[in-house]
Length: 615
Image 1 (cartoon, rainbow, N blue to C red):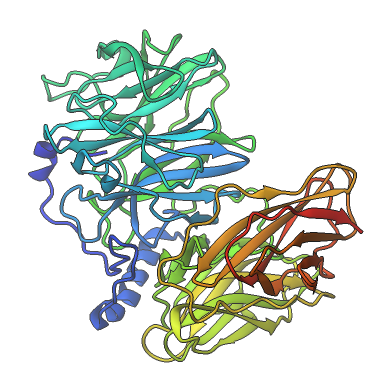
Image 2: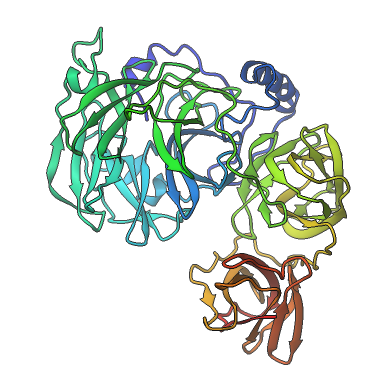
């Protein structure tokens, strides 16, 4: 959410340069130069001294460190927080933003990188400026309202992206701007009666009533009267008498409507107003967050999740950060008894973890609480992977619940060089080493293999550090990892064939479920990846209304299909009849619980009729 450019340009003498180059606009890793690797430890030390107060083991704000992020827009969906952000390009000296990004978390500290599902290029009528927007769910779809510059008029306009998944990909919903009056920062809200509202603006504040299709509106856009009683008093700027600057965030709580916004300029702080209706009259209530951090802009986003309230914002706290290289952070807060929002300060500790992370289910490598040195990129196996790994880099995953202990550790890796070693350490990058898996060359950065190694001493709940060691240069890429509990033996996990293409087919959006009934479980299928002559499939088994002690999934292979290998399940076949049964560690499922197995097959991807039975 840019502040008035004419105001800030004269006030910013220089902008810090980030030492991490990050992926390019195609999602491919850029090489880091030798000087960047030399200055990185010194820069990280300075960052540590600045960000981490005495007694705090490791900062968790900002919540993303692999790239610069800005303009947070959280959304709670299916018991998970999805976070939609902008992306400040490295070394920016203006609001250079070409794409939007998506992250998600189930515990508010470990955030999964879902990459960029939408960019300026999504909108054929737009030319530049992927600035602050917001996503909302309705009618089985996700609508992402964003400001971009119109190619034909040169004016900022509001476009709408749409997807059936919270992580995209998003497409242009209408092929033209929804509204266009040169103003920015849309926020969207659906009232209890089903009426949706779109608000946006800088220097003014506008709203329009959206129709139920969320891509058209009734009536005409209406300008909200900005009064000092409604939005506070600004001093020293007669043309902008109120505090309202930009970035509105509108929501309803206990019958009261809140409008939280970026106030004053420049630097901005966060303030808010309330009203008895979604269109006013608004009453100014005060500041939410004072001017802090090294960014001269800020942008609010507020959600409730698992019984707590969270305030998202951005600052310039990463190395090289500033007004054009910002980073998203989050704080937990509680409303006052009268419904007012307390004054909050930026912290380095961030929100506390909600629950723990389960190491005995597959965890994406790009699920990160904090990292040093790594990047992320698109994976040929689908989703993202961790890349640009060099000797001494590490990833922290917070609050991992090992329980009574783990026996083995598996990781999905790829290397075009000689590989290296992945170490699992507890509570710090130099803490107790509980596992070390050797990674050999696989023949390519997207040629995936699974490695496993024994585990000793991993019990209880700890922060898990994945520390990478090896020779010089890039070592390997990491796609996912998973522990097996004590007393179990992991099933074989396959290697992706060497013919895996550089550009994979997308995952199937419509899984094939097994029929429901008295079998005690159901199964659904999706195609994870495909290439000429083969594919990778994944099946999720879900227990019914009662627990199951074991399961088996069967289907008939179509002509030309041969299942060659399975993992997280035991494969057997007779002719075209395929059966995968549970392993010793994933057969017992609580009512409604799920587990997933995968397989490799020759032939073309199917839409199999799955039969799941409990044993």
